[in-house]
Length: 356
Image (cartoon, rainbow, N blue to C red):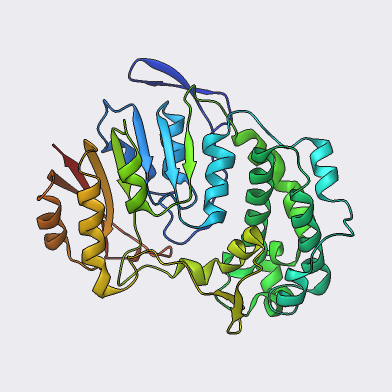
């Protein structure tokens, strides 16, 4: 079992503490592969960029190893995870912050109650979320705001069946005795889930002695601006087998952004228009990879996670990479299915190790 802020390990002759990242529930997460990824990374690097960071699982692992870490994701709820747990060195939520977050707020909006009552939540829970979101803005520190958003978003993925918002079964299953018996969390109030998670997230905040950074930008534009990065890790959406992250997690983005300029469409009330990544349509995928690699050529090392069911295929990816770097390929075969990015039995995860 991992310990929080106490386990001593040795990294290249340096003693560092090991900290525990709270468990994530995110399709395509590299939580089970992160040690394999790190073990195949170049050992002499000092700075690390996770360019499609998601819930910052890989970035947090490298932070634990004493590296300067930069994380980037174009979804704002993921940006706040990086802000709370990667960039943040020592700011946590105290009792006064929690009291403020849970207090009444007559100026709170009603976006969640008006839009998502009887979609994912009963009215009282939707009203609670509007109130909580308004109170986040009253916190006196940006890291506290990011931490509060991150903890509540994790409470939301624990409460809603399957941990995502691309289905309409959450309310029905939360009233089904058999479902609740198997997973009591889906029937618990969000307030209780939030309070239960606060110590875990507070304990995950630590200072690794580096000035770590977080961005919410287009990756191709960002890599052109960054200097002094030794290793960049690319884990983009995989065309052909990746989940539609904005469809699955649209509510988390709506809760963070508290949209005033979006439409809410279809049964799940997903926001429209969506953000564009450049990797979700087949006709644009090759061009996006070419731009990504050409603008990243100045970074000495690349690691690229990829899947055997993705487009373009492995051989085409190698041909493209070799225009800029030498490449070795490591393989991991999935033994069972655990969701997202083609991670099902019999498929392979590729790790392209790219170097000069």
